[in-house]
Amino acid sequence: MAKHLKALLAAGTLALAVSQAQAADTQLIQRGEYLAIAGDCGACHTETGKAPFSGGHAITSPLGTIFSTNITPSKTAGIGNYSEQQFADALRKGVRGDGSQLYPAMPYTAYAKLTDEDVAALYAYFMQGIQPVDVKPEATALPFPFNLRFSMAAWNLLFLDTKPFQPDAKQSDEWNRGAYLVQGLTHCSTCHTPRNILMAEQQDKNLQGASLGTWFAPDITAATLQGQPHWTRAMLAQYLATGHASNGATAGGPMLEAIDKSFSRMTPEDRQAIATYLLPQDSTAAESAPVKRWTPVEGDDTPQAVLNEGAQIYRNNCASCHNLTGQGLNGLPALQNHPVLNKPNADNVAMAVLQGVWPEHGQGMIGFAGELNDHQIAAVTNYVMHDIGHRQVDISEDRVKSLRAGGDASPLMLISRVGMAAAGIAVVLGLLWLRLRREVKR
Image 1: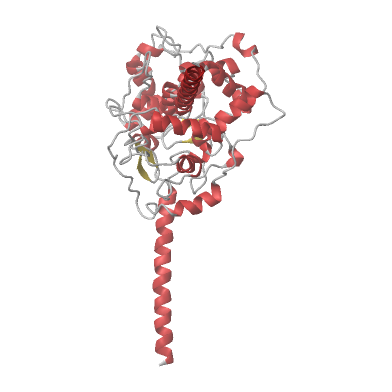
Image 2: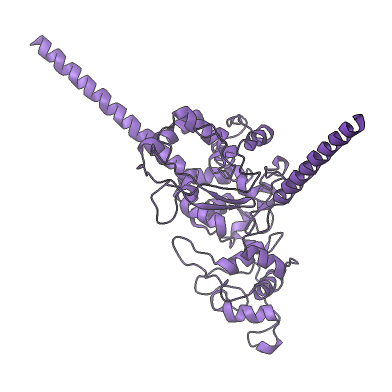
């Protein structure tokens, strides 16, 4: 009888241990799923209409098109053979399982800040939480010399900081959580920090705004956020959750995608932590302050012939949603006092006109790339910037043409080719010199 009871107790203990282990694994996988959402992994590794994380998404870069890889646990097409250490090296050092280098289009320079615990949770999710897909996406083929991946090892020596995030003991837990997210998982600096000639982030200009080739990622430092139009922590958290803020801001382009796929799916606590980090000294005074509206000199009955070209285009295409004076209609965004007009360039306004703004949920704005030519888009953009935004910022027809084509090419391409040509000439001259020396010795 006693032996029977001991056997039952042992079996019960084993079953409890197995159940607890399974629960722990489930929690780890669920945590990894949340971290993958916060890291916006799906934006690059999930192509519309294809299986999650199966890759193939085309990422436009100044050096050419980079196709994202399959990061499902497939052993033939994905990362199913990766050990946890290999996964960590890819995530934080930019080194693939086969030892070759990743391009920094994958933001491993930011993911380097991740803790070991978060890397382990992500590994558990990608190995156990998603279905393997045995399909290899199109391979990236950048032009020479950028197709030589080993050159990235030298780039990493120059620009990759592999130190994990270190909390600041002088700051609150909420501030440190926000710092960890902004600097690491949500990789804000990869868009909002300008880059040098070698495409590395300029750390002395961290989060001070940068062109993404087409859209412009604005300055999100505290000094700028506290300027005009004023931001508060509540506005920032609201913006990250919905793409809209009470100061009139509306998200577009890559930021709208990040909000739809990542920030809006994060916890309110994490969004608030990000806002706390970006705005260490909060002020709520501006939330209750009345918004100053501009009253135009021209009335709504101004004859069409009197209006300049930009104003005519605006009336014909934009006023039905944004009102003749930019005050907005039927719940659609006002353009007056809109933060997008308070930028150092007009790229985002022109891009909104070209491509439109389409959130996953709610009302969107159609694009006019098929209806308006480059000259017309420049004209209406300048009208919005000057007459509605009262900003002395212009955009040229040539710039619109470049935006329509995907942005300017990187000067690094030209520099590298000039460098290769110079190296080739140096080799030829060296061979000629050696030949002349031999001729003289004869």
